[in-house]
Image (cartoon, rainbow, N blue to C red; front, top):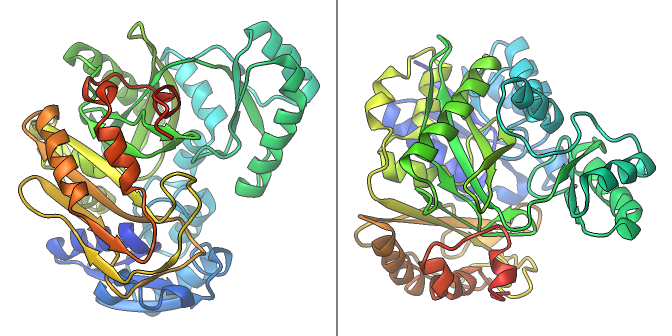
Amino acid sequence: MFKKVLIANRGEIAVRVIAALREMGIRSVAVYSEADRECLHARLADESVCIGPPPAIQSYLNIQALIAAAEVTQSEAIHPGYGFLAENPRFAEVCHDCGLVFIGPDASMMEKLGDKIAARNLAHKAGIPILGGTLDPVADARSATALARKLRFPVILKAAAGGGGRGMRVVTDEREFEPVFLSASEEAEKAFGDGRLYLEKYLENPRHVEIQIMADRKGEVLYFPERECSIQRRHQKLLEESPSPAVTPSLRKKMGECAVKLMKMAHYEGAATVEFLLDEDGLFYFMEVNTRIQVEHPVTEEVTGVDLIQAQVAVAAGERIAPLRKRLQPLGHAIEFRINAEDPKTFVPSPGKVTGLVWPGGPGVRVDSHLYAGYTVPPHYDSLLAKIIVRGADRAEAIRRARRALSCTVVEGVKTSIPLFLRILDNAAFAQGDLSTRFLERQAIV
């Protein structure tokens, strides 16, 4: 097992990884930008290293600075968290070349699955259901329009290197296709340095359901209970739960086996999430693979009792995942709420100083956060402040606990998404589990 691990990330996920490492008896090294000097992860780690100015490109995305920090602190491995360089094959490759263990898949696996088009092709070869669309990038707006006409509108354009809803556009009318195509490609180029797009038939009212997997270097792959991630705004997840209200044990088995088959074909190692769309007839379609730990991993931990971060670290150190087999059935129900520093009506970011803070407690409530009273939320990074996770014996109890937990949470000085979640919890369709990726729009919640 490793003696020291550097965390190439910040904020909430860095704090989460530090906690997991501490339980394992592994020393942690935090990195921070000048804007994050007072961030909690820099205070909690056993060692901390400043890696550059506030802009992420000069700090958290600076591979040279991260490698130098690892070498100076004599770290043996690097945990990338999520976002930033977590799905960057070049970073994984440089870590390997410098004698550092990258806690995640190697560069070749990442390229095979992190590229959405390559992953879609692999799923197709594996016989996993995919939506109608292209298996190659669309060359230009004109040829893409012709393909969209054959698929019949509505269609969705997606970035090959995409994530977080960027470079993704729904097109309902041929007349608007070309400008939307150019806009999506430009956004993808700016966000990922890759403007390639592919085309899929758009499902009008699907659920977004994903399967967490863990794979060891001996080729064993396990799947965990599914997560329902349908509550979204502009293709970005807001809250997640496990298990899904719509997934039966037999459907869970089918989706899980498809995820395992795909990962085995890719000779994958580490944690990943295979994402699917589930239609109103109960049919599922492969969407993409995330080759990292997900923001929403705590709901899986809450219903299985498995620490997924520790499992990641153990796999990277060469340990087997067989002991986890007995803990793969969901026990109870968990819901996670992403508490963002933003206006709950307009979603405009709300950076600033946190002047007061009270987190919820009591049975079945967990808070993952880097926030504390007096901390100044910087404007340079993602607006995620915390994740409030609740667990109950069933979904109804989890909802009651969520309402209690959110209503007694106090964050003063910045606006947060909590009022939005309280409106969702009071919605009758949500209580009934009647969810889709268009939930907010159809229920007129925002």
